Amino acid sequence: IDEGDRSFGNSGGEGGDEGTSSRVIARLKEFMSDTENRGLVLFVMLTNRPDKLDTDIKRPGRMDRKIPFFYAETAEARAAVVGAVIRRYDAAAMMFTVLGYQYEDSDLAAALQAIRRHLRADGLFLFDVWYGPAVIAQKPGDRSVETEKGGCRILRRTRAHLDTNRKICDVHFDLTHWDEVGRATEWEEDHSVRYFFRADLESHLADCGLQLLDLLSFPEGRPSPDADTWNVIGIARAI
Image (tube, rainbow, N blue to C red):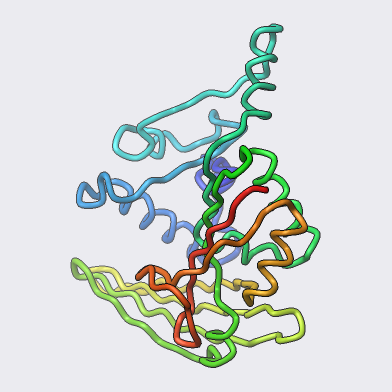
């Protein structure tokens, strides 16, 4: 959660949405306090103004660890920062379809170049993407999924559109949450995700000093993904 003081700030305000934001944030706080989720879900929040965060979001059980970051003020501290920036590793991972959110080739190249800078020669890069043959074959459309837990119910409806020229899938989400007493909260989101064919990945990776070694189905790990394999894991090597 970036700029946490804006989402969880003590300045409050309904934001002109008839209190929907406040109810969503209240449900999120409740979720964070649920002991059944402890050890299963990790929240990371960033803020430049911790003084503006609500007191209840900072209490133990919600944000348990507070890690301050300060500007380096000594030569030793600056050297340590530089060392961390230029350090190289044996492996790097970029999961949760992060590459798919790099819509422009320039953004994709910048992300892959950053990975390559931090890998030693022969270091491995693991990533996941939407697989082009499956996206084209299955043609994402309108879908509806409903889940229920602890007396609460969530309905997720999606509408998708393929831009085959840009190789991007635009997805609109409508979500409705009913609490234990039947009160409904609604919100919507839009996500655009880029999908890749093997040749695309080989070319983009090679341009940034990386060689594609293999693609596997995700999460099964089967070799030779096909038109039924929407998500794939890629393994590349720094050259």
